[in-house]
Image 1 (tube, rainbow, N blue to C red):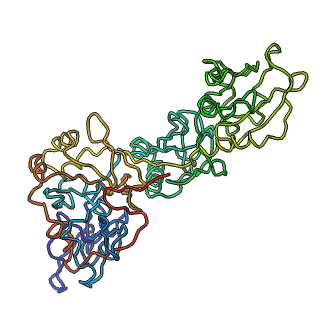
Image 2 (image 1 turned 180 degrees about the horizontal axis):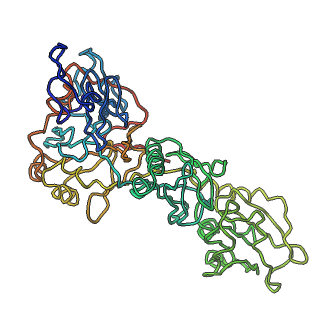
Image 3 (image 1 turned 90 degrees about the vertical axis):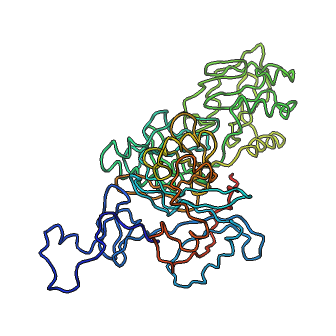
Length: 529
């Protein structure tokens, strides 16, 4: 689809008749026949048949065109030939029958910012300002792609495996692109990208960071290394690969939680259970759960710092062994037994929080644990611990500040857009996916990339990330916040012409439906897990 006419370019080319040519300067000779793209501050001058540095715009027959197609979503329609989620993209076909418009009357289409383009700074109205009617209410959706320097990805990695120390640098291709942040329940967390890595470091650091972010946003695999920690491969919706080994499970809970959850199942079958965990190791007979079941105290003495009864901190260092610790032999965390409590024949189960590691012991005459084959009933409980663990998975959340001049593409008074969003008068989506708007000042939004269409993210060589964003509100509210009312176009008009603004794309271009397993109906994000 063709971009709006580039500012500052002449309406006519050079005269065809050679005797009418004038003497050109060296700069004019170099730029003759080229089209300047003003979508970002790089201001590429693009030769015929070539694309700009971002590969998003090209010179076709002296016109600046968009290379990427605009993606549309639609609600499911109960018809045999249109009952699955479909993306609509604009194609170069000259066939006017490629799209017959029968979805228009139902107002089922939703134009996303994927491929919509924009300019930066946003001195023009947004590419698409589309009116439609939903359940009898006149609405407006302002559609654009933001060029974001202030943006990052928050990575949630569901695993007990130790990845690296908090605050450690995360590297891609040797460049620092983020850091390890605070772990959450059953998950390790990374913060990647951000303005300081994109623009605050070396040119190579910025380029590597930009490419890494675009790959993660587009659901591709990225290889990372953590200083003092693991090497890994992460990809949205996939299990992480840590030091060459795919992770399997997210823990059911910490060691203390696991003791509480399965205490009743262990009663009568075992005399002591130790659930090894990097954070909180649980001991059944000392734990409140064991006391409620009137279990006899075993007399076990554990390494580490005792917190409340049955809960121990720092029994080992973080690592890739049992329960996210660095131990391979679980007996190494047992310092001994109190003879007045322990007894020969005492049955001991040691397991990890995921059940991936488990061993069965009995105390001999001198109160030393001797490993034996695990009874079937105990094995079933350990297997149940594993069954209660969710699959290990990587979640990639895009976080961006939609401030600055981007708001000028929506309204002549940018603060009114911010206030309207905070008052829940404006719904914010990214590629049609629901976005969470953070509290506080500005427009800080976060979205799960798995809910967005494939290849939603692009780049510009400034360096910065390009991502879709849409603002939907009632027509009355858009008018009140000072929106660009003169640029509002009906959904029917947009779908029929496909143009950016009235002086945009040729009318002969049409919209074609293409099946896509990664595009979902409006209001129905994918089920994860």
